[in-house]
Image (cartoon, rainbow, N blue to C red):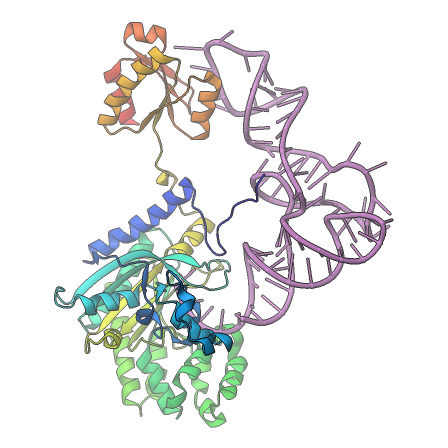
Length: 458
RNA sequence: GUGGUUGUAGCUCAGUUGGUUAGAGCGCUAGAUUGUGGUUCUAGAGGUCGCCGGUUCGAGACCGGUCUUCCACCCCA
């Protein structure tokens, strides 16, 4: 036997059962996207490298899959760069395209490119695979799907509120209880950095703070010291480490911490508006929680930051994230267009639903009835009925070969086809069909109308 | 990108300090059953022990490399 074929690291095949479950999640998300007024777009799986490079930070650039140029790509490479093994320089000369890394940056490119055709505010959703050259782990793949909903062209905080509701609506429809939507605001983080006199260390400061629940207070302080944040500054952060209680209490202590920072106060104001409004309106299954340690996507978020955690007890990273970016299209030359959006991690939501056994039993679309093949004349008789049933929208198939009956029955059994029709010489003579219910084992002989009627009912 | 971990039949896994012909359960194929699946019984097929190299009289087991799996960093959905 030849060497067993395989798929590349971090990629997967999907069986019919898995596709059915994935479709269920996607249809659920899509349904809510539409109800909230978002319209679908799609963008190419690969972009020009310059569109993607430099948009996700240094780490992001490393994780972007580069596509090799066609043809004799080495002939144009600078000899010096090649002999010095200068990968960065060589890559830029042999690769001009790259697989998309997320859906937000291609969307920003789309908005700028089509700005004259778009009616703002533009609400779009997009559900497509993205690729990252990361090292795979549980719930982390090199090819995975994101389901994004973004609004551009409006700075209104009502969008943030709607997006929280959108998260809640989707997870309610998936019957996924106990999820937490964490919210923070970049302006609050900037305010804190300002108050402690570490504005220039904003990123290092927030990245360290983000790890609080992972490495603890001492770990965070240690990392901040290593990054050159002064002991004095860290001392001022002390209130943050004992930050708990309700959202209101947190906002209160934040207010006293940030009273000297204009930007900090603005951030508090924004978060407060979102939290209070959501509290008024109510959520179905989700919990909205202010988390000042939340600091993702800092390279472009400027206002709200969202992250959705899996329910407690499920070992899984975040299953969604998002935020507001005031100037994402700015890098492509369109200034002053504010955007806010959220993303659902399809593959991780799948793993969570699987672990909690939350997929409905009816998810799998299946053939409803199998016609047993007894021979040529019988198959022809069966096909006439089959055509009629298909017109009525009933999924039906004929076993293709005149195999032994046991084999055909076993096939129906394994495929979990709920009904089997037996039509041999006797039935042909009487213009009838014998319909067998595979679950109960009962069977009855009916004419074509009776057959349609019974299959439509069940 | 750093450190660790895993790989034996289609699947889940045994396999003793290195020692004849590598096993089990499930699944698969055939028969008992020529118009009746699931249960039962009987028989059978199926392995370059991830791959490449090394140590050894002898390697599934030990060593090195590589790929893969999972985990911790990093980062993230």
